[in-house]
Length: 369
Image (cartoon, rainbow, N blue to C red):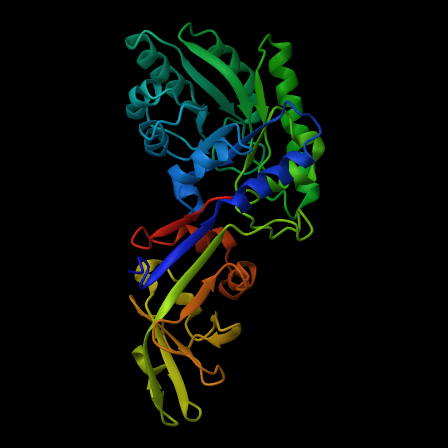
């Protein structure tokens, strides 16, 4: 019995190991740690299995976006350092402390909430101070950073372990990245002059870690690079895409010229055409924006998406591909279907495509031999 009759995702864990080793080869200090960014279900690759594998094959920490993601990792038995790199609310402090999650903060009120939770649990909260150097998404303003660091470090049930920032466009804007990096370095120096000694300083995402050696510090947060998505040419073609999304032909028909195809009749056959219906749709996360614009690979050839993408089906034109039959595989993204090309068609990012893949699409994990 085939366990994947309709649509599924294959995750090549050997590719993730390869990519983490590529990142490691770019680090100038062997003691610099790698945090796998596993938020949003590990960019659609699977939070728990990917994190567990990565921690044994090149990653030292896991970075998540929410307390809930951190709890899922702890409940799965993962004991490595986990850092929550997005804002949390005071009501989440109790769980964050209980599950030993490092938390990034920008406000004294959150530090107080974490400290109170630690007092109640007879332990210590571990915090990192986020400084906003230009992304304007989250973080204390630079002029207020040293003062806040001193206040937080004075709390007895808090360990102010780290300080961090986040680049806004390290993959494509070197000038802005340099401004952010220099500002961050100045803030770190101001904090140290005020008597704060951080164990972990971190700023870099994938592009920052691989393109700016002086931005590597003590920890790099690696998402795109770990999963083999390389829109910035970080590795010159050496990265290996870990994810490949597939679907099967569920129906097959030959239509005469001028036949309308799918909802709203946005496509009409130009001649006698063979239309294959794939068992995947926007209900699985396949982007509706690829209607009449996308393509899949079948039997080593391109098959264009025709008509509107439906909730549970995608229609492709296969007249020029001989031998297509019910049950045949189509590759939707990954492998020979470059996700950078799909992202360009949709005017989005590669990782938006993968993070949209819904939970009803099963993941198949391919372990190294």
